[in-house]
Image (cartoon, rainbow, N blue to C red):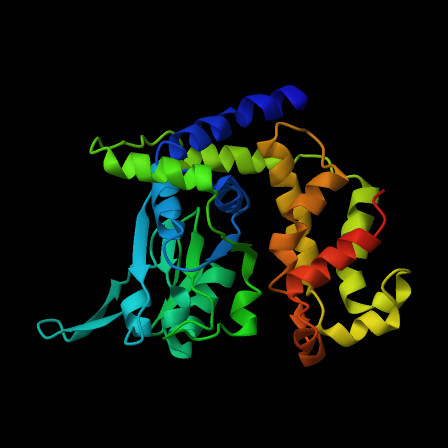
Amino acid sequence: MREIVQKESAFVRDVLHEVEKVIVGQRQMVERVLLGMLTGGHVLLEGVPGLAKTLTVNTLASTLAAQFQRIQFTPDLLPADLLGTLIYNPRTGEFTPKKGPIFANIILADEINRAPAKVQSALLEAMQERQVTIGDTTYPLEQPFIVMATQNPIDQEGTYPLPEAQVDRFMMLVKVDYPTKDEEREIIARQLDPSATEVRPIITPAIIASARKVISDIYVDDRVKEYILDIVFATRSPEEYSGLGADWKRFVEVGASPRASIWLARAARAYAFMNGRHAVLPEDVKAIAPDILRHRIIPTYEAEAEEKSSDDLVADVLEVVEIP
């Protein structure tokens, strides 16, 4: 199994190498987007404008020989602009479906929180059920189907907060921060150099499907599963875990949903695969837990008053829950 994983995961290094021809730094963001492709989980990237969120997804999609659609979300976007609609044919007297841009393998929902709630709800069926209903007919979406969305912080002009039900359908919420001074120096140097860098497609949907099959065979020990459950249940019942206690519960309005447990297990397998391992380590779970939990924990007003964010609450849980 170790040899199989190392052989099947060899393309990961090639993909990262291709992406780094264009993207400077932001290694964690690139890895998380690739992790979404391998697990079939949707990824939400959050950060201020100008941090290469859109460029990263565009570049990574260029390494995959599959259908890619970029949808710019705006306040006047309609659900039909996303899903498609029925067109009346006067010659036949029938309505024929005109499919929208959602019918692709990789969807880049750019600035997703700048569209109104009606458009956000139109995404729910596609993201969860991998299907779209136009009129009375339901159409399955092609596999792989992944939504890579970007959003600006909600305190920025013209943004709408995403509904909790939709946010929970994203496997990960990845916070994107500013590059370091050395990285930004390299960005300037590349932008001043007029030579263009081409990214070649090196993976196909068949390679992704094969990788997913191997990932499903990666071993997850019962103690690792118990560790995942302890992390999630600590956000719901902190009084049962020494180090948190009942007092900590006043900071959490809503704990992590069962989707958190499911995605922690799936993503930990894919993370181990990306690192060439045939079994999941507790460190794999701990490494990806912040991205999977931060949008599934809703802090109370009391937590906000004491300037404790969901990231701080996740850090508290990971520090307290014992590693097996």
